Image (cartoon, rainbow, N blue to C red; front, side, top):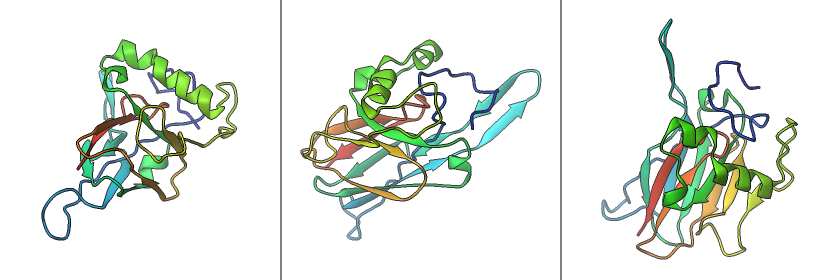
Length: 180
């Protein structure tokens, strides 16, 4: 359930919040990108009464890498899922919101949520939890809803590509993956 302290209002507020953390692993040989990269949703919170709430819901690590044809393994800590499900959605770099105003009016977030069949007036799960063009997780528009159960995504983007991602429910949860 959403808490009244949330400052961000996104068309999907009824769905919940989550962050996928990107964990950069080093290949067993110690060289290059890993075949499997671990991305985790974590949360921390800092409160200074009378001043602010700092919400640390995020993907960790922020920057990651994986070999083309490799796998991204999504997971979450218990606190990372305390505010509900998340999405792990690929977008163009130019679509990443950078200001509070852009986060509150995230256009690409609404578009992706609509593609998922999410109803902003319901807490029901989206009707299409996974979206891709049938060729793997490799381009803007590919997206999955993440409820905390471990998930694996095969990355088919070409070597040298950088994939940018965010959570459409919590657009400040962002990161990038360098495909090597």
